[in-house]
Image (cartoon, rainbow, N blue to C red; front, side):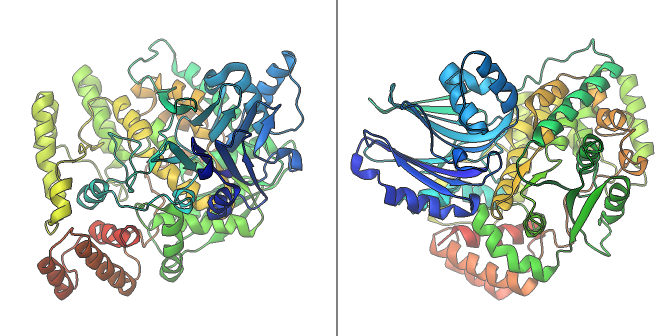
Amino acid sequence: MCGIAGIVSVNKSNVSKGLLKSMTDAIAHRGPDGEGHWISENQFVGLGHRRLAILDLSDEGSQPMHLGSRYTIVFNGEIYNYLEIKESLLSKGYNFISNTDTEVLLTLYHEKKEACLNALDGMFSFAIFDSLENTIFCARDRFGEKPFFYALKKGNTFIFGSEMKALWAAGVERENNEGMIINYLNYGFLENPEEKEETFYKGIFRLPASSFLKITLDDFKIEKKTYWDINASVQNIEISLEEAIHKFRDLFLSSIAKRLRSDVKVGSSLSGGLDSSLVVTAINTLDEKLGIKRNTFSARFPGFHKDESTYQDLIIEKTNVAPFFVEPTKDSMNSYLDQVAYHQEEPFGSASVIAQFEVFKLAKDHQTTVLLDGQGADEILAGYHSYFRPFFMELKNANKLEYSNEFNSYKSLHQNNVINPLLEFTLRDTIYRRVSDKLHSQIKHAYSKIEKFNFLSGQNILASTRKKYTKFSVDTDFRTLNSALYYSTKSYGLEQLLRYADRNSMAHGIEVRLPFLSHELVEFVFSLSKNYKISKGWTKYLMRIAFNDLLPKEIAWRSDKIGYEPPQKNKLNVRYFEDKLVSSIEKLNKNNYITNKATRNFKDSGFNGLADLQVWRLAMIDYLLK
């Protein structure tokens, strides 16, 4: 896990070690263990690196790393199956100097070029310069766990980095993207689901997950391609539940074992929910024979009805772990808000992201460099209760008797669930199921209007209103369960959570690994029947029964679903927010998003009448606008 940066230009004067150092200095928090800078012999390519040493702590693991005189790489992330790949390459006659996954990746690229991506189980973003072909190859992992931002400047100059800070340090303009801002304020969009490259800043793009980019320097031709996707439409109807349980266990435990490979201390996040609890108990099962005692890190919220400390204690009692806790408060979260916004660079969803920041700080304070976490399970195994709606829609269209039985089980199980109350199926849902796709889109647009900020008006609004993102909702828009899961996993949802975790962990020099995001595991789960994911009113049904023997029954068969949610999920200190809101309104006015009259009205009213999410969005805008 590291920070990478680079400049590729046909103008040699644009590439310098001084500029590369400015870029890596801006992301030094991502790699506190060392730095490196390199410029190609033809002076068209400059690569920079900040190192967080995880595998092979010697100087042999330093970057930029070279393979002979032909290849040079800067790499951020982990290749979990590097030992298996290395063994295969050794059998073909390749030799290795280091014990790093970086050298394995570079050698594999020499062997297979872009096809190497298909062999990788990992989280990564990297750039490889090939001096013979005079190309630079950049790639990002399947789910977007590791970031990769880039900008194109006049004169055929390509600048990239792990964070936008590196690009700004290289002189890329920090200019706001009005379309993103308007869609964020009106609808809460943190990404453009239709154009995944777009960011909140004009001229700065993200390389989409599951994609690579290749530049041929001779003519500065840029090729972009998606190398992996999930097939959500094909299901294996032959596999029995018992077979599915066996394979799911094998794939998950294998994923855990590979993600424990490290030359530094490894621990776990423990929220008390089903996913993190399974990660901790699975690790404990693998570690029992070795007698390893690992650290766990948790946030607690005493007195809050969604506090999960009771469930955390059940796991701690069952396993051989050393637990550590932090209790985020209004004051602590207020004090970290500016830091979190600085590291996130773009708006984030709620104060729960700040609580996560405090948990990672706790891990850093206890010298634990790698954490395994349960993120990703909800999106692939239907963990959110909102997935019941597309599940029932699909059932009703296919088998009304099965629908009736499942719906009755759902109502019986959740009738007293105060955390996740029963979903209401309204006339609106009936209309959505019956109308044509064209009318469906029109109704969707009509409903999206009521979420707008009515005060938004001005010169920039006129230019941006034509660029409205399609308003999706997992509750109503999906006719099958897999289509909803695919949207959350690949289109909109999961990647935001991965961004929060990456920036929050790397702010403290911590690496987060996610066992549920093994692509083999994900592909397998998507191939299964909907009834293996939701059954008898239970979400994540397959996971619950597959690991019922490891988990305490109070956790394995919890009927509620609690997100990573502090009491201060949106509202922090009101006084602090008032300052942020006033500043945001003034900046919106200065940048022609609202009129002078609207600005005065807001100040005079004291921001009365705004919903919590509207308050939060306005506060986030203060970090975007100048």
